[in-house]
Each structure stands twice: as structure tokens, then as C-alpha cells.
Length: 308
Image (cartoon, rainbow, N blue to C red):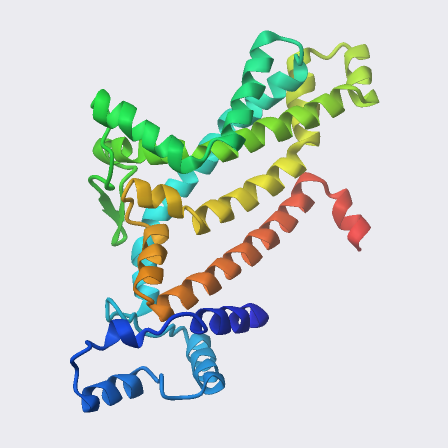
């Protein structure tokens, strides 16, 4: 995280000049000097980084240049929207994709299995922005079934608004959620199919059939358990990736989450928001990888014994 903070800070502060956004062109020199000193932009880069690092260790990511509020408060206010959209997309993709992939691996020569694999190829190949536009054109413009943008009505729980708890909010979430879930769906289908095909040829399945176990028992107790580790790995990484980089979908559907926030911050050269966002994304991936490693031990205790 320390190394990432250096890379992010230097990289972000090397592009653009936020003074063009912060200071009007006709501002007098004394106002310019005050604003430059107020944000510490008159200090050398190494001193700016040390000040930033000390503040971050105290939970202070600074103030947004554009919104003039604490960056952490700004990010946390947008996090629930992205969190529920990403969870909807990744969980939906996993719960639909894994059974489809297992079926495609169990009956690889069936026409339905070939159709499933064709769906996975589309999920990998078709750009998400194009799919998003087609979804809007079809279901929002032509048919008028679903809204094309916004988050809809929300219900507050502990001071945080959630849209999935209302029908109106769910209707707003459906199109961006489907668009965001296509890649995860395709990934899970192909991963589950490959794992199932491999496990079905092992002695474990042969012995299970010889012992008189039903095909459903073999699939549920043996195949799913043996392919669970790579699925958990991909699920965790996809959740982190979707949370961090739902930029295209949130922009197309005007979803007020972190993706739209970072795009606006880049456009406006809001440096504190960009730095805080990227550092928190790095922390997110570190945490997810730790959780995945701990989950491995629960799925297969032998992994802990080998590592010891």
C-alpha cells in the first residue's frame, strides 16, 4: 500500500494543472497566491506527498477541489450506489453462470450447451458500452419497460440510501446490472465448464458412479466442491474489478456511483479525489485477496497444511 501510494500520488500529480480549474482566469494575483497556498500547491512534490501520507494515516484524504467537502465523505456517499450495482451484477453472473457452465460441461455435445457457450463468447466479445446502448434503445426507448438512467427511489438504513429495497429502484438497477454482469457471466460459464469437463474424467466421478451415487449427488457434492476454488478466486477478483471500474456502465446509465465520480474528477482535475479513489481501490484488492486466501482454507483445509 505504501508503494502504491507513491505511484498513485506521483502519477496523478504529474498530469494536468488543477489551478486552471481552481482559479478563474481573471482572478487577481493575491487570490491566486492564497488558493495555491491553501491547497499546498506551492510546496515541492516530496513535501506534498509527506503531508498527504501523514494526513491519510489519520484518515484524512483532504478536500475535493470541486465539491469542497472531505474526499472520504464524498467517496463514501457514492459507494452504496456502486456497491449494490456491482453486487447485483457479480452475484447474478455467478449464480446464473456457474449452473450453466456445469451443465455445459456435463453435456458438452448438447445443442443447449453449445448455445450456452455461444452466449459466453458474446459476453467476452461485445463491448459493454455497445450493449448498454442497445439495452437502453430496446427496453427504455422502444418498449418503455424500464428507465434508462438514474438510481430511482431509495430507502435509508442507518443513514445510507439503498435502491434495491424499492421496486422503482430495482427497475432502475436492472439495465445497468445486466450490462455490468455480462462479462462475469461469460467468465463463470467458461470456468465452470472447463472445471466440470476436467473433473468428470477423474477417478472421483468413476468411483462415485460405481458406488451408486446419483448424477445430481456427484455434481453437487463432488464436482462443485472441486471446482469451487478457481470459482471463488475469479468471483473475488471480479467483485473487486466491478466495484473499482464500473466506469463505462455508470456513465452510460448516469448511475451516481464511484465510476461516474472518478470520470468527473478526471475531467475537472480533482486531484485529491483521484488519489484517494485509486488508493482505496488498491486497498480493496489487497483485502479481497486476503479474504480469498482465507476462504481457500475453509474450502480445502489441506492447503493450510501445505503452506505450513
